Amino acid sequence: MADCTESKIDIRGTGMYLRRGGSGEPMLFLHGASGVAGWIPTFQALSETHDLMVPDHPTYGLSDEPEWLDGMEDLAMFYLDFLDQMNLEGVHLVGNSLGGWLAMEIAVRNCTRLKSLTLVGAAGIRIAGKPIADIFMMDPDDLVREIFVDQSYADNILNMELTEEQLDIQIRNRVATARLGWQPRLFNPNLRKWLHRITVPTHVIWGDTDKIVDPAYAAEFGKIIAGSEVTMIEKAGHLPHIEQSEPFVEAVSGFLQSKAA
Image (cartoon, rainbow, N blue to C red; front, side, top):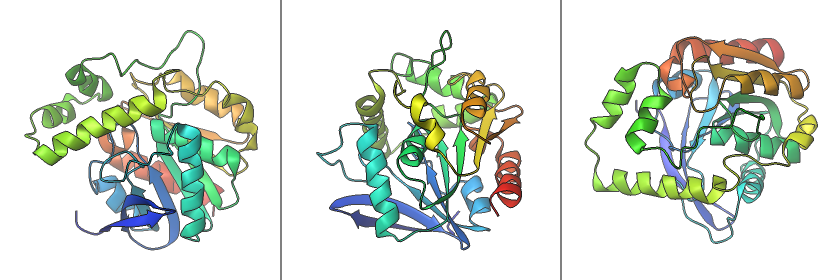
């Protein structure tokens, strides 16, 4: 997949690695704890109808590690600066897992530049009795297997021979996730009470067999974010945009056409 440009841009003194491709209304995809696996088929498909931007968050991947980053609140403010500096309007904001949590932190602060919000297996809140899986304490190989329903995806990842740079990035991503979500584990106790500030059409997408963030969270977000809709992707775990690309893209596109046109 080569239909994107990759560059490092400066956002108020922080270098951010950005993949960008396609044309149309802007769409910003915020990755989860494991980072970005390249310009995957889902990104290629979404870029056929949108100007798709897929950055590495600061401290992740090939982006800089700024001294000012202490938590998710800082990261949310950084992305609001990004939207301002890039002069983006009518943005379709999509976030997976930790990126879904981040997307909500952005939206509750300011929806002015947003046109829609899509949450995919999002962290960020806590349901009593259904904690998010403790990814920090899991064996890395076991974690990969828990993420997917179709174990061929896990096999491909676990059998891949990584370069030294890829190993370094993997370690950076784990450290960055611990920095942002170690305590409390992958949620903000204060976020729930501000979700009423999300005023754009919101789509909650979940894998029906998600073992990292229980599908019960999909219904919870659907209940507490006014006017939101929930779509369950069959035979998918925590990364439905990877494991079930076509149904995922159809769900995203259908919602945007009907609710955020």
